View 1 (spheres, one colour):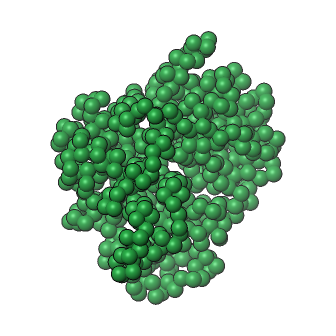
View 2 (cartoon, one colour):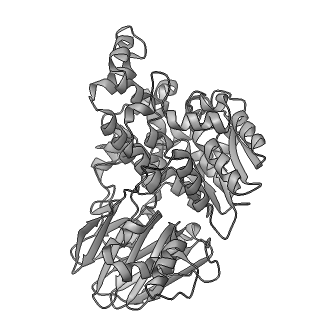
View 3 (cartoon, helix red, strand yellow):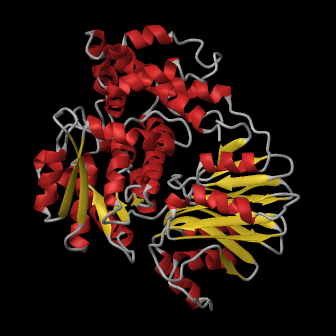
Length: 545
C-alpha cells in the first residue's frame, strides 16, 4: 500500500523542490521509501509501504517505455507472473508492481480484467506521450484528479492535491454546492469539493493524451462461480489475501463479518493477530465481549484497546488532520486510535467491510422485501419516520444494493478505512470486496439473502456452523460511537461551541438554513448537525495553507 502523486504541465520547471514536498505530505501512506520520476512535462511520485518483496519492489518502476506508479495490492500476482513467464517475460523482482506493468505491456487496456486486488495506478508511455489510469472496481483505493485546459494533477489524497494546486499557482475554487451537499447527506456525491477536481471513476480505464482525459474501457468484473460454494470462495480469497512478506492480522469487531474472516484466517495460519475496540462504561456501543469470545475460540493473539472520552480528545486533532474531503463519520475517531495501535505489531490487516453491501445486511433491505408488513407497522406508529423514508423511495432490492455500494460503502466506509489506516501506514484488505464474492452475490436471488428478522442469511449460516449461534444471530450493531453524549455533555461540545462562534469560517451562503445559536442551545437535539458543521469548519481552516 502506498501513495501516489504527479502532474502533467506544459511548462515544467525544476520540480525537485515541490514534488519532495508533496511526497512528504503523503509520507504517512508509505513511510518506507519516497521517489519520483520526472521527464519533459510529466512527473510521477510514489511513497511506499513495503509489504511484498520488501527489498526490490520500489517505484516508480520503469520497463521499456513505461513508467508506473501504483497504490494497492494485486493478490493474484504470482499466478499472473507464471502466465507472463509462459509468454516469454522474465522478472527481476517478486513484486506485484513488476507484474502489473508487464501485464499491461502484454495485454494492453484489457489487462485490468485479470487483476484481483485493490489498486489505483498511473502508467506513462514515454513513446506515445500518454498516461493510462485506473482504479479497482469497488474504488477501494482512491485517486483524485484536477484538470484544466493545459494541465493535469493527481494524488491519492485530496489535501495533497490542493497543496499541489496551490504550489503550482492554479486558481482553484472550493465548491459551495458541495459543502451544502455534505451538510445534507453526510458525504459528497454529486459535486466536487474543489471545482474541476474529481475522484477518478472506479472500475474503468482512462487515457490522458493531448490535454484530454478519455474513458477507454470498463473493467470486466465477473468471475464464474456457479460451481463454487460460498465457504470455498471465502476460504480461498482470505488465504490469497494473507499472502504477504509481513504479518497479516484481522480487525475483529465481534460482528458476523469480521468473525467469519477470523475463522478462515486461523485455518490458514496459526496465532493470527486480532484487534478490537472497547468503549469504556458504555455497553450500548461495546461489542468487545463478542470479539473476545471469537478470539478465544480460535486462539488468536488478541489485543483490545479501550476508547474513552479522554482518548477522543487526544485523537480529535488527528481526525481533523486526516479528513481530506468533508465526511460525517464519528467512527473515524476510534478507527484512528485502533489503526495507530495496530501499526505497532501489524502492517496488514483484514477487515469485514462490504459484507452488508454484498449480502443485504441492513434494515432497509428487509423493509423493501416485506413492504406490506413494515407499512402496517408504520401506520401503527412503529418507527414511522424510518420506514416511511425507505418506502417512499420505491427502490427494489437490486437498486438498493447497488446504491449502498456506490454511496455508503464507496463514499463513507471505504474512505474512512483508507484514510484512518494509511494515516499510520497500515494496509487494510477487504475479502468481501473481491471479484469472486461479488460474482457469487450477483449470481444469487437477493430475496434469499433476507427474511423478516435477519439479513445476510448466507453469512449467518456460515457463522452458525463455524462459530456459534450467538455470533451468527446477534443483532447488527455496526461500528457506532456515543457521539450524542460526547457533544452534549463533554469537552467535545465545548470545542464545537468555540469553533462555530469565534472561529467560524463557513460562508453565510452555506449555512443560511442553520440557526446555529438555537442548535448550540439544544446540543442534545442537534448533536449530529453540530458535529457536521464543526468538521466542515475545521476542514476549511485546514486548507488555508
